[in-house]
Each structure stands twice: as structure tokens, then as C-alpha cells.
Length: 420
Ligand SMILES: Cc1ncc(COP(=O)(O)O)c(C=O)c1O
Image (cartoon, rainbow, N blue to C red; front, side, top):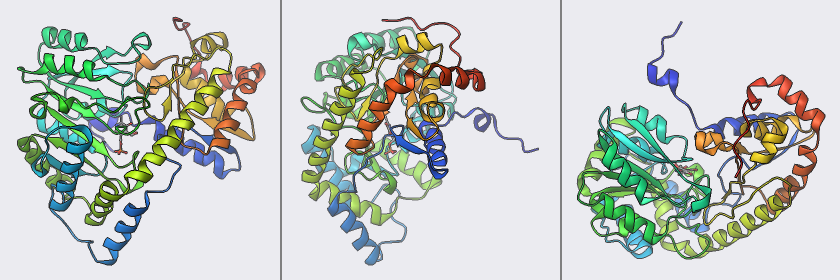
């Protein structure tokens, strides 16, 4: 019998990838599944990035590189965030890793000690807590409320700093996965006012920085003094359809950058140089394609919302950003006696033998997400329409729901969700 560590025994992985594996397994057995579970792009990687990546491989840029990233990439990234988001970064502030996600771990390892308190706004991205657990930190949750358009409140930060025995950090994620909430410039200014003058560090997770559907993305780093308090994480996965390349970077104080460089050195050595060349080309030459993709995503989000609004019992708050829609399905769950992730799994597995829709229950993002579903826009338009047309029919098949709950009693709703 293998004895795993306590961390490995208790680790909760990102459920989107588990549902993705289930959806793909069903597809391989012939089921037609519309996959709206994973936050990926249906578009090809932007053209200059693709070309530069292939060229760099041909030019044999295939060996090790500096742990912090190629100097040419770091300079390009600094120029990009300075012009795009309006804060004064230089190459010294930039460190490269395989997407935005690894920076959750590096942030925790570089800045957090066991027993430190870390404020998360919840629902939250599911890997935040496992990465805090790696360091024995305490996650402290503050709710994001639908009535406040899922925007983080400075008052919650103030309360956390005033009452926690060892407050150390806060996690922000705007635009927000899964709710689509977007923090305004004023929200961030108010939070920065609370953080400034303390030793609090902020992990500002900004993978959806080009998916703000009205106005522009605001980063807390553009608030005075915040470069000394923050690690802001960016990725090429969403803006440039490069999720499989695994490429992202963070912006932070040079001392934090150097510490993360040491962590990278001891964990993965460096990021592939040809991937960084592809990403630099994306930053420098693919803005037009990126913006065209973002416009297509905006239309897909509208399409998904239009479809969901037609389903009885579904409450839709149109997302201010991201390519997710997070509808309130509490009345449906209460009527059918099923928890929200059970409802999601029923739509995939139980509702029909030949057709299914993959999505996630809100509880995959913490208890605060209970009673909601998360749909992404990762499929072509006509497939989104097909999925939406399927929902009312699937929700009316009472015999199928009863059978599904009988076979999966873990999804029975024991107490009705409080409705809005
Ligand atoms: C909030 C949030 N953080 C981090 C990530 C991870 O991004 P990447 O795939 O670039 O590591 C995602 C991806 O869905 C996300 O939604």
C-alpha cells in the first residue's frame, strides 16, 4: 500500500478537467456532447504567434533558457502591460511561467508562511485553495454577491485585515471566473487604499484582461504604490487562444520576481524559449486578431445568455466580462431535488442516451457557488444553440431525472437552496 502525503491525499483538483475527461470518454463511445465545461477557446492560435513558434523551433531555439524568461520576452511583456494597462513596469518586473496557474503556487511559496490568513472572494477559481494548502495557509472566504454584480468589496478586505489573527494576502480575480463580474476602477482604488501602508500582498489573477464587455480592463497595479504589493498574473491562453502552449507571465516587484525565479529554477528550470518567441510575436503583432476573437466571444456570450433566458427557472445576470455565463438555477434545483453539480452531470450523462451538454455546477468554485451553473463559450455558435435548445426538453424529463438521482444519490438535494 502506497502511503501518500497528507497534501496529496487531500488535494482537490480542478473539476473542469475531470468533467472534460468524462465528456471525451462519452464522445469516444459515440455520444454527441456539446462541451461547455472548460474555459478554452474554439479558435486557432493567433497567426503571428503560430508562425514565430514554428520558426523558433526551426532555428533550434529548443534548449534551456534563463529561469526568469528570455530578456527579449520580458522587455516585450513590460512594454505591453505599460501601454495596455497603464502602469510603469520594466523587464525587471516580469517573470515567465507555463500559464497563469503556476503563479498561484509561486505566489504562495514566495510570500506565505504556514498559518498566514489569505482572503479569497468566493465563488473562486478552484486551484487557489490547493495552492494555499501547499504552504499550510488559511483560506478566509468573503462572498461575492449577485446583488453587487459579483464585484469584490473593499469593506471585506478592511474587515479581514482588522479581524484576522495573521492577515497576509488577498486574491483578486477580475474579470472573474466563474461569475463574469468585473471590478471597477473605483472598487480597485478602494481596495488599494486599504492595502497601502500594510504588509498585505495581493495576487491579482488577470487571465481575462481582454474580455471586458463594456469599458476597459482595470488592474489594481495601476493604483499608486501597488507594484510593491502585487503579483499580477497574465496568460496567453484566453486572449491569443494559446492554452495548450502553456505560457504566461507575472508582474511584481523585482525582489519578488527574483524569489519566483529561484522557485522556477528548483521546480522546472525555465520555460521553453520557442514558446516565449511565439508569445512575444502575439504581443507585438496579433492585437488585431485578438480583438476580432474577443468580439466573437462577446457575441457568443450574448448568444448563450439569450438561449438561457428562454429557459424557465433560469436567472441570468449578463457577465460584465469573461467568456462564462453563471446562471442562477436554484428554482430548478429545488423543484427537481438535485444539487447544481448533479444537474450539470445529469445534462451530460443522464438526460439523453445520444446527446449531452457538459457544464459545471457552481459548487465546483466553492460553496458560495451552490445553485448556479457555469457555462463557457468554447463551442461553435450552432453547437451553443443546440445545447440551449436541449435544456428545456432535458429539464422536463422527470422520469430520467428520478432514475439519474436513484443511480447517483450523492446528487440528491437535502435542503432546498435559499432563493433570491
Ligand atoms: C481565474 C483563472 N486563473 C487561472 C487560470 C489558468 O490559466 P492558464 O491556463 O493560463 O494557466 C484560469 C483558466 O481558466 C482562470 O480562469
